[in-house]
Length: 284
Image (cartoon, rainbow, N blue to C red; front, side, top):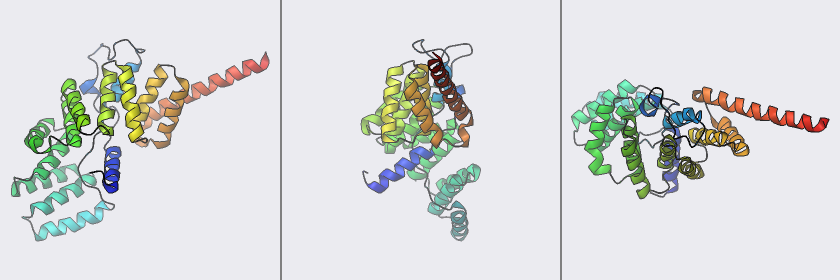
């Protein structure tokens, strides 16, 4: 912990583990016809709050490599030669996962665990894979099994909080994220998640503070940039909103198409307003 290599690996893991926008609105959004906010901010920001709640960021412990196709071929061959190797099946599961072959990845991990039931590393990998695949009951069972081992790890607690959030227990999720921060005050993922939680609760000040601190630690968090930009927009803090939206647009990929459209529309509106004001001034 604290090494430059470890810091960079964690930075990449946080940034690559963003949940797709809006993926969890059914979990934390308002009841039909209800309000997501407490009235301290304009009602339309409830949409942004719901989006924020779907942008929970946490570190994943699944490995990374540069060419997963070559690795898949390598490890499939190795498993064929040593079919009872739990370690090789675990690694093959990681490779499949990073190729997007979720079903094969989970089956490989399950087989690894069948061969070596005492592997906490494989149990944790399955907990995370089940979580990201939406199999929440299975994820919960595995998180509970490994909590005794990993319960003092901030990244584990952050992921556990994401599970509790997706199960609908926001208070327990927030408690886990706070525990993560008590262990690692600079955990950008936990800070980002708490910012989302605070906005859902209508606590704009704490939401902004959590997001700003998270962005200080990891400035290129696309989801957090969008969230804080909508907060600035709703608060009519135009300069801050424009700056955040521009940074968001510079980093956002195709998965953020709807949010990019919103950002571009806002920037276009503010630009038109400035041109009109300039024109009025010139004609007086």
